[in-house]
Length: 508
Image (cartoon, rainbow, N blue to C red; front, side):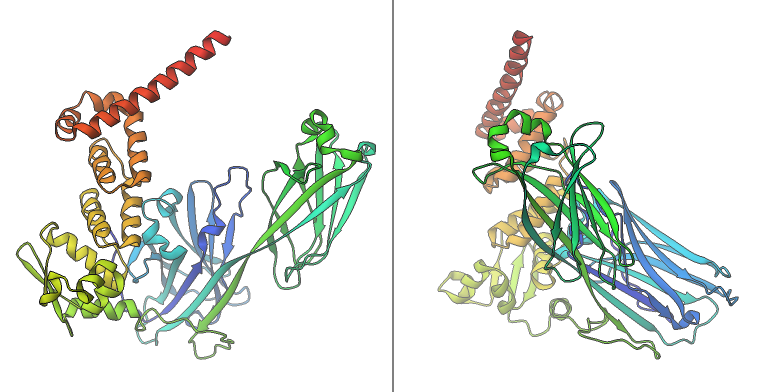
């Protein structure tokens, strides 16, 4: 459960906001992903100008956020400090944190690491960790024995921007390419930050496959990661084979050479007439870079920062926060929702702006428009409160399977598509033997084919456990048509699998 943000801090706060974060974590199994993402570095006045940065490291399963504070080699500085590192939700609540108190090591580095499961961040909790694909990390530093410092704030915003180009590489007299020989291609990128590159293609000694060497360097500002992909083009101009995507890195200080393997020799030998017309090989190359444009805000007294744009401080007023206050404090309300034995004050203009159904209630000649109150007999009070929190503040709190199903029903009824999608995502990620039949009924009633197919697939996978259970017996009695449809689905799937197995036996 998220933890409320602690507003009391007399030290230094580093807030790092990363937009389009998921572009760094791609799901292509053939892709060599970048392993780290580094924040801007700041000098911390509280620590006598010691430098601090945050780095995100990740592998196939774990995301590691590491905060490092660097001591100067020429000075002893050993105060006791407390450092806290946390993932924040979009409303500032803490999703996950770690805290460490220690004496600053002389002539060394103070390091604090925060771990998160990648499947959690990009799975059922994605709407909390990555609202609108934005990751927010906060690092707080304070001196343990000092309480008089004025709070200092440093905000860095990194936005990942994808830029791509493609080109054709025509290699004539391809059959004459022998071991030890290479053909070259000079590439002049139009993307800012990239210098001219040389590409050379040659045969490998062992496998007789092809490999491409890419040689170049980045501009003087920073190293650059590039995603490369090559495709084989036939004589009709159609793409016939797409090679895996590769990551290469260009350094700002020196030229480096990266190589990409092209396993296409077998295809070329089988379909030589299609791919080597006039002994000419045609490749299509494409590359993309993900550049992180950075904006910083620093309120430390001696900070010298150019401000092309100043992000809001987390403590500043926001539209979502102001609307949430209107809802919580019942200020300026002009209507009421009656649900169960509860009356909830509302603002018609806000509900109408967020929901087409509420807008129709308030603008057309409907029964609900005759007075100031709306009766909702088919929902419970807690579900309505959760729905209103989403309408006012665009947040979903404390979802469980039962509440997600009720909220899904409410979102569909009042045409709140983003809320419906969040509930659907949660239900898909939390299917279990105890809830899958309820989810199937929900998806069927609301004509959600994606959710329904996922539930049916889960039932197929756990058929032996479900079909003999009391749950299934009750389900079959109450939802006869849906149960019949499910049995037909299981029968057809099993018949297909068994028939395929018999076919394999006959051909052996």
